[in-house]
Image (cartoon, rainbow, N blue to C red; front, side, top):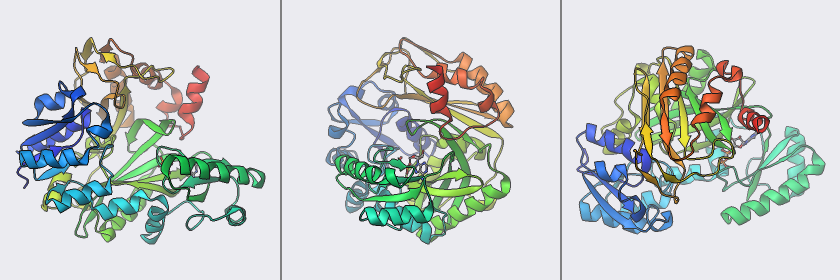
Length: 447
Ligand code: ADP
């Protein structure tokens, strides 16, 4: 096992990893910017190292400082959390070159999945169903028109280097295509320095369903069921649940087995998420995230498996603690992402939290790094906590969620809590009847 784990992150995920390391009896080091000197992860860690000024590029993204912090403190492993350096192949390579274990997949696996065209090719080779479309980048308009005619309109043009929902354009007919191609290409060039684009069939009303996978790096792969993350605003997930209200056990087993086998064949190590759009009974691969996800606690709630323990075990060479046959799905779980934002305009609402009171009781988990009197720095993302609720079934889970939302108090700033109080009383949500466009339409109506 590791001597000491350095956590290269902040906020609730730094605490999440810290808790798992403590349970395993492994000392922790955290790094932090000057803006985070009084953050909870700094208070709870065994050691902390200040690595730079507030902007992320000078601190949480500063690879040299993080490697130096490992050397100063004697940390022999790094957990990157999510965001920041978690999907940076160069970071994984540099740590490996310094004999420090990156708690995650190899740099090569991160690289393959970071390029969307390469990822889609790999997925196809591994037997994962993909969205019909071009085989690779499209070179010109003639080729684009030919492929679009083959797969049928509407189509979507996407950037190979894409991320965060940027560089995507929908074309509903041949007349639209020329413009969509040119705009997507120039946006991709400007945003990512790479103007390669590809074409896919545009799905009109899909759900976003993702499969949690784990690999031991030596040919064993398992899946831990799906999460339904269809409730999104500007491609940002807002509410996640497991299991999906839309899937039956047979569909779950079929897509889960495909993903577990793919991970095994890849020799993938650690946690990953294979994301799909799901429409009319069909699954269509969109990307694989090679890290722990924000929404991982809903999977932990229904399986009872601590995903960070598993990540640490696998990275240390101890293998997975469970086999596929031992994975059971128990009840239902929902996560609400609580952001320091205006619940109507979603404008950031930094400031000081004058009072913070979290709900409790059976089936309630709150992952958060904030406290009464905490001043939210304006430099980082607006997530201040996650409420995760578990029940024996979806109805019980919703009842408990409604009660927990009523108990939750965050004073001094604005948060997205009122949005969740509205959603929990909505008939479509109660019936699990929503797709990836539902929330945007609902918010437009409410304005
Ligand atoms: P990014 O990496 O930029 O987030 P993704 O490929 O994950 O891009 O897609 C982001 C979102 O864009 C999806 O969750 C979905 O809402 C939409 N999208 C992507 N591809 C398609 C498609 N073929 N049809 C319909 N919507 C799509």
